[in-house]
Amino acid sequence: MFVQNPFIIGMLGTLVAVAAAFPLAYLFERAGFSIWPTVILHVAAHVIRFVEIAEPFYMSAVMGVAASTSGGAIFNLCLSSICTDR
Image (cartoon, one colour):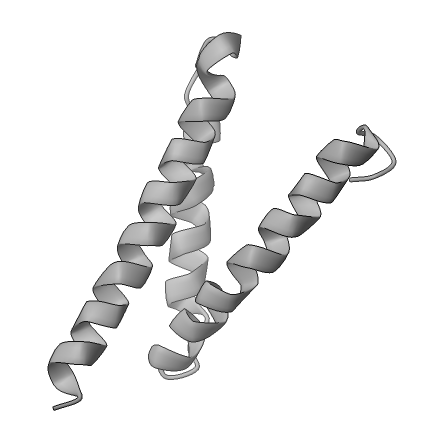
């Protein structure tokens, strides 16, 4: 990432990866140590790349889909754990 892109892009990509690691680890643990929920979430976040989007709107569309799929999955997981941990 740092070789082909400017330093700031590489650094931001690394920060996003570190920030995403903790919710994905939580999802992994709550799913009974199965990799499939995290795989499905990862694929859902990146499936937008198969859709042709104009250049000015591409990054906002990718970030919006990634945030909505990740945030929705983590919110639902936390909500279900609150409801079942009584």
